[in-house]
Length: 494
Ligand SMILES: [Zn+2]
Image (cartoon, rainbow, N blue to C red):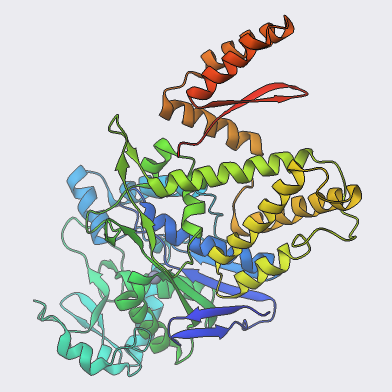
């Protein structure tokens, strides 16, 4: 199967063929760095991280560009309020954003350009637009003339006349049309500024992306992405600027948009004040669980995120509880698979272990359907556990080979999704401690009881040994006797 992607402009799934065989240029709009990132930001980053990972796993050389908007009204306002410079605010939140993305296993993009480092590209594009009669200076600002760009509205499926009649009449005497938007904003007293042919000022938000895409990808390039809330006006305006400056068709060939996080029946959004930061989730959960939850839904569909409070009043996120338990099951299985002897010599295996990779790729080739792809992995995990639990489930050599195949294929698919990439013990130990904390279990006391039990058993006092096992079970601790000694885990609350 070849890769098909849902192109927002086409309004349907289309076969993906890159401009240059084997290479993909991709741009996605990054964060405006004036505050901590929330789960909605995380969803978009994880979605495009998976797309970049999967394209690479499919053999493409990917040039992925994700910008940082480090100058903006919101940054300036925050800096004024805190008596800092805009650059200080932007720097602080860029660092925090990077740390949050790392914790979510989002790989760095190939280029992470900052808007303020690309003023020259912005000026170049505005000059091209001016030369083509698509930009005009007025009152210290420079505007894009929307009525001069006939294809305006095509991405969002709107017609320019309807947009005009529906436009709010803004108090801005300089704009020739209410649809026109700022390319360059003249500096007000005290604001940071850069020099330009139109006076001191700074770029508008939309033009930055045209400038940075121009610098790192050139025209045209394969994929432009972002959250669905950027389709209009941000992406519509990017198209107008870049195609206005470089010619029709000289910008992104495909548009991909990720869906929103549905939080309490509304879009999770900073501006609506309806959000939970990634850091807040990390206080209670392993962020890999958040990542698994986010990719458990197709990237274009809304993903649910709800909040509940436990009896101590601590915030809990039921979907993340569930994802964390599922991840623990994956890691426990991988841990057992790692211990299973045997190599894969390519011979016959128990079905469906022969099809893990093909089924996974088929799902991902269908517009990066991670939900279906994870469903395929679940089949593989189910089979692994069946074979691990029952040594007689298949002939000895077939069983060993199948387990080796599953071990290898699950690792490869996990890498393409950016999940279960750590040593199992690293996740499972942390998970056990978190469950202990949530259920008020003292790990040291459990360890002491285990020592007590093994002493009782050594002294052949099996009644006492069983009693200890039972009392631990009652508080949610399950003991596992292995040749290497007794281990334990906290059972997941149901
Ligand atoms: Zn953008």
